[in-house]
Image (cartoon, rainbow, N blue to C red; front, side, top):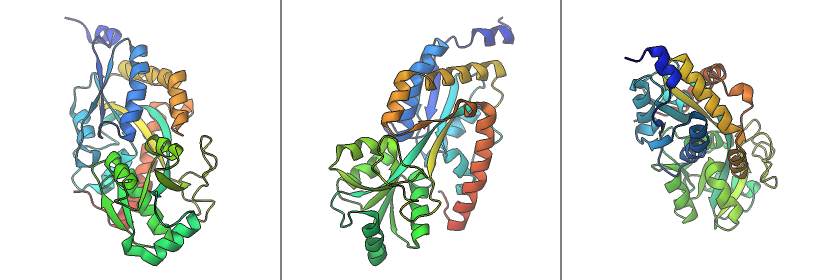
Length: 311
């Protein structure tokens, strides 16, 4: 029988499954599939991306938390890891206790969009129209607890208006309905919206959610510079393994992640999608653990103040 030390030295000797909490084609899935090939190359095994959808993105983390801690089942998740504890009374896992941390991945900015025939043509006109029409204006999101919902919530809160929210089962369907004219506004990640914005005639864009303009789309002003002071929503991602995964295995996963983030194809694709790879000193277990703790505290206050509750 192979000793544990020998097994870890030989790891991996079969494919690794990277679990994504959201549907194929969505922003997090795009990131996962981008990383899977170069990570697999580094590990010498295929990294298979598997979508485990449902319950506001909580089924996938629950599955990985209960998986055998051997490194063959890992999780990629965005800031939903930090918002879930405040959203759900009976969360079947603890993000801060039930995982080993591999490292942060990237920050994805968001954009505030409208349907192409929306009456406003700039942010000033948008504010005037929204304040005059309030409950007639619909704001789409990707579901309870989705980053698009939190971004929309922050937007409505800062302009002091309650908008009619329309939840969807994922960012893809929400964006499709926005382009089809069924809803008015959407705040969504650039991994999804950049191609549509660059197309030039399917949506209107009113601003980006980061403090600085995006290098790939410098003509789009920030919401902060247009009057929403301090508006800053960036969707960060991290990779996790079940608690108890051997340190030698998590170290190999970290090396593979770092190699993937330095892959020229990945760097170019992320740049095209207006996303930023985090500095290498954040691609560590310690950095992800501390960032998750800080974000859990930050968004917990926002969610509880808004009275949002997941189902």
